[in-house]
Length: 109
Ligand SMILES: [Zn+2]
Image (cartoon, rainbow, N blue to C red; front, side):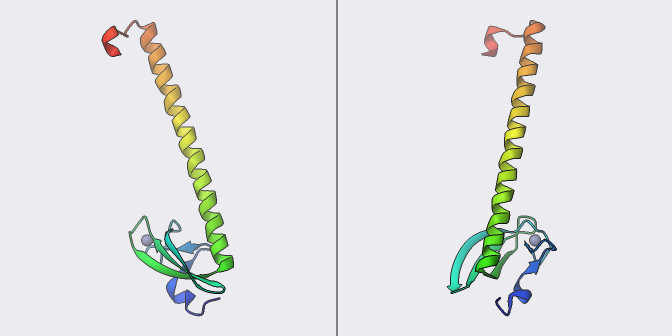
């Protein structure tokens, strides 16, 4: 484990990384650089306070970070799909209500 990691990165109780400035667990990697046999330097950006930081992580920590990002991406896509379906459903329901109320005119298209 890199010796100066504690002074560079804050850790969450789950083993992830957090913004050193605001403690947000939402930090996002901007750039990964391999700096040793078992060490990477990761430039991260906090979406909440917009700070940029450099993290030094081991390969295992990088894999953990990547897995957390993959899970967050998957969750984000699931939420976006759910919202997309909900918006489509509500649009269809509004269109049906308008059809039933005879509020659809040729100029609506
Ligand atoms: Zn922050």
